[in-house]
Amino acid sequence: MNTLQLYNPATGQAIEAVTTNKPADITSYIAPARAAQKAWAKVPFNERLQIIQAFGEAIIEQVDELALTLCKETGKPLQQAKNEIKGAQNRIQFFGEEMASYLAPTHAKNDPGTQEYLWMEPIGLIGNISAWNYPYNVGFNIFIPALLAGNAVFYKPSELVALTGLAFKQAFDKVGLPKHLFNLIQGKGEIGAALIDVGLDAYFFTGSYKTGVKIAQQLAPQLKPLQLELGGKDPLYIMEDVADVKKAAVNAAEGAFYNNGQSCCAVERIYVHAPIYEEFVAHFVEEVKSYNVGDPLHPDTFIGPLARKEQIPFLANQVADAVQKGATILLGGKAIAGKGYYFEPTVLVDVTHHMEVMKEESFGPIIGIQKVSNDAEALQLMNDTNYGLTAAIFSSDEARAEAILSQVDAGTVYWNCCDRVSPWLPWSGRNSSGLGSSLASFGIQSFLKPKAYHKRPA
Image 1 (tube, rainbow, N blue to C red):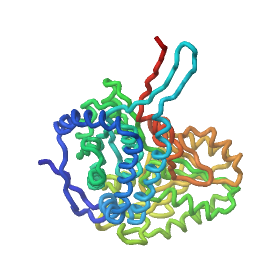
Image 2 (image 1 turned 45 degrees about the vertical axis):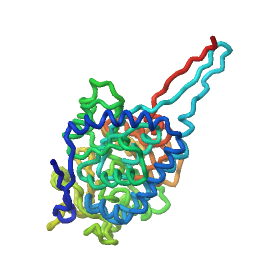
Image 3 (image 1 turned 30 degrees about the vertical axis):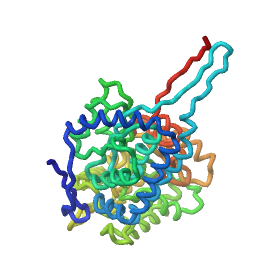
Image 4 (image 1 turned 90 degrees about the vertical axis):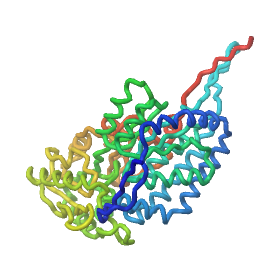
C-alpha cells in the first residue's frame, strides 16, 4: 500500500498519512464512473441539487473540525480557514439558482419548415486537478457545477490537502451521492499525470503556470477540453485622489498579505502616485507591523507559516535580487528562525521592473511598492507582465479609474477593492494566467456540450 505523509507547516512535524492511488486504480474507476454518470444525467435537476445542497450542509456542520484540518495541512490561520469554508457555500447557491435554465432545451429559430433547437448535455467524465491554497473555493468552483450538470468527477486534490480531499469524499458519501460519481484520486504529480493519460472527457486544473503548460502539452494529442486557472502578478494602483490614504493602505495590505499572500489574486505589486507615496508607505508599513505572525491555531494570528517549505528560499532569492538591484527593505526580508516554514512579512520600496519581485509571482508575504508620476506610467507598468488575472485601482474618481482599467489586460478588475471572487462573475485569466473561465454563466457552460436539433415534420 502506498501512503502519503502529511506535515504541519507550523511545526514541520508529521501529522497523518493517507493512502495514495496507483495508475491502475484510475483505469479501474472509469467503467463504473461512466455507468454512474449516464444514470446521474437522467436524474431530475432538482434531485441532483438536493444532494449537492445536503453536501454543503454536511460541510458546514463540521466547519470547526474541517477548519482545524485545513489549518494543520496548510498553515492557514484558523479563522481564515473557517472564512473559506463558509464563503465557498455561495457557489452552491449560485449554481443551484442558475444552472437549471441552461439545461432546458432552447428554441433557436421558428421556421415553418424546420424547427431549430439547442440542447445542452453533460460532458461525461471530468478530471479536476485542484490546488492547496483555497481547496474549498477552487474545488467547489469545479466539482459542484460539474456534478449539478450531470457529470461524474475524478477529483485530485493537491497532496498538501489530502485530508481535506478525503473530507469531501466522506461528505458526499454521507449525503447519498451515488457511488462512482465523485472519484477521489490521491497522490503527487505522477498520479496527476496518470489521470490525464487515461483520457477523461475534459480536464480542469488550478495551479502554477509551469504545471499548467505541462498538462496542456501532455493533453494536446487527445484533443480534449482543458481549462487552466493559473497564477498572477496582480497590480494595484493607488491614485492621489483617494479619500482616505490610511484606509487605502490598510485595504491594500490585507489584499497583499491575507492567506500569507498565497493567492493567485493577491496583490503582488503596488504603484502609488507620487504626491501621496510617502504617506501611503508609512501607513502601509504601520498596518503590516500590526499583523500577528505565529501559530495559525491562535485566534489572533493573521499570518501563519508558508504551506510549502520550498517557498522560503524562493522568497529569499527575490529579496536578495531586489536589494542587489537597489531596493530598500522597510520590513522583514528573511525567514523566521525556529520550527515551521515562516517568512517575515516583507515590504520593499525603491523597486523597479528590473527586479524579479515586480515581475515574477511571489506567492508569499512579500510586496514591492513603486512610485509613479502619472496614470500613463501606472498603466504601462500594470500591463508590463506575462500574467493577466486581476488588477485594481483605488481612487475617488470612478471614470478616471475605469479609463485605465479598460486598458489593463486582465480577466478581473477592481475599483476600490481587491482580492475577491464572486460566483456571479466569471473567473478567468489571460496570457500566462490561464485558459477558459469558471463561475458565472461561463462556469456552467464549461461542463456542458451543445447539441443542435433540426426538426422537420415528415
